[in-house]
Length: 268
Image (cartoon, rainbow, N blue to C red):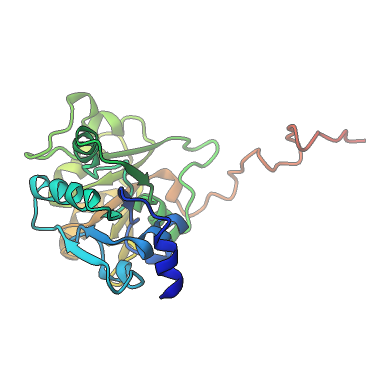
């Protein structure tokens, strides 16, 4: 406790917006963990961030769940706490660059002249790919990863980014926020991907009740419904998830490939 309180002196009053990653506390960055253990105030999205993320915070830290609050109450509270000289952590799930709603918070903090810092977290697609032991960019097969979501009533997707048009690339496609629209998503994907394309259905990656099911694309909606995976579900659709890819090899570490640090050797 003494060490933590001593370190706290060096944490300046500001808002530290942290990406918590998909749910596993061990996937926090070292910086995110340090800030969490030193912060005076922690506002966290309790519906998306598991409580295990907070197991090493200071005993006297003020913990404020925000699952039932709006930005109109969250941001003024953060501003008030910083103006009181306190270090505030705003803990978001996943990766700050994806569907995190931090843009609005940044604008309001700037308008109020409040210092802030963004600390990235890994995305669920990265954790999911690691869980299923897959690389999503296989030489000669697929070299592009698309991160997207389906269009909903509250958050429509721009027409140019509709799922069917993105599926035409046949890339490794990581589909967020789609479980409630899975039949529609499957139909659009089947317009371009073969029906036997592997799909990893990833429910609450990194949480204690995590489930990951790999099925053919034509079974994506059926499997989702059978297992009642209504929310917090990510889909990885990719030819890179095929079983036998032994003939696919990167040139990066190939003996016939040379680069600055490994000049080619002449074969006698």
